[in-house]
Amino acid sequence: MDVLSDVITTMRTGRPASRRLRVDAPWCYRFDPYEGAGFHILLRGTGWLLAEGAEPVPLATGDVVLVPQGSAHVLSHVPRPEGAVPLDDAEAEPEGRVEFLCGKYRLDHTRGHPLLGSLPDVVHLPAGPGRHAELRAAVDLLAAEVTGGRSGRDAVVSGLLDLLLVYMARAWFEEHPEDGWPRALRDREVAAVLEALHTEPAAPWRLEELAARVGLSRATLARRFTALTGQPPMTYLTWWRMTSAAHLLRTGEQPLTVVARQVGYGSPFAFSHAFKRHFGRTPAQFRADASPPEPR
Image 1 (cartoon, one colour):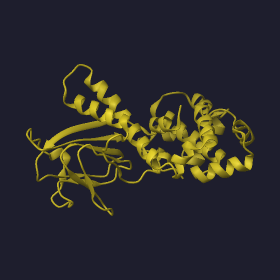
Image 2: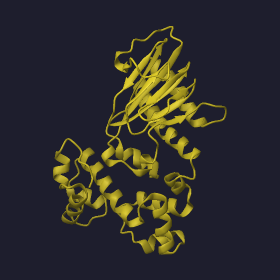
Image 3: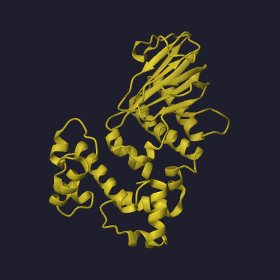
Image 4: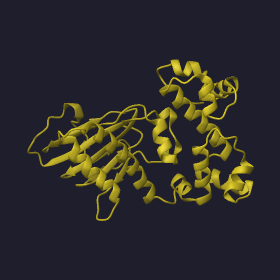
């Protein structure tokens, strides 16, 4: 599986949700901090997104905004947050001149991946001719489905919301190709190593083998991989194995021996020791605990 798909699958903890709303000025809606990511699409009219400690972001028709860390923010008809009320309290106005689609993804940030962590607190993707055609197509389909009553609507909307998250992240990466993780995904050798580690996390990888696989020396691979991802290859592999194991423990009922084998450990004892060192508790405790712990 490719890295971005792997990351989203591992972090997701539930189904996404969305709401389409039509209003007239004045309007001002508050979004409290959320364990996940939020998004907004301005389908008609203009508005502003206000985030603490940041300059107001002007929004025009067709603009898309992703709030990847689920931080608090406000949507308003003016660049001021005074008088904001929760979106749940909003009353739709059928003839309103402003229309937007808001939604959220349930993501566990304790299993957060630096790929999504590299995104800014607010990702603004302005509309424009020829910009991000796949994202625009998904927006159009989603806007039509959320107000329709056609059979299969729930399944279609859920799938389109998943597509939307990928397209929003991909659009930002394409606009910032020289940044750390976007650059890592564009670097042929580093990307090939990442794909190998994500495709076969249980394989007994060694740095020598990975370097030979992509035609680099051990030192060159270690230096380039670390510069672009923030971790040496084998450190990243251990971290990804533990993150994947946490996902398996939380979402499945496989015996510990199976989970251990799926993330590259030959014995439950060795796996439990590594897992406790990483998360501060045993796999059994982690699975039983309803609230995710913070990694050490």
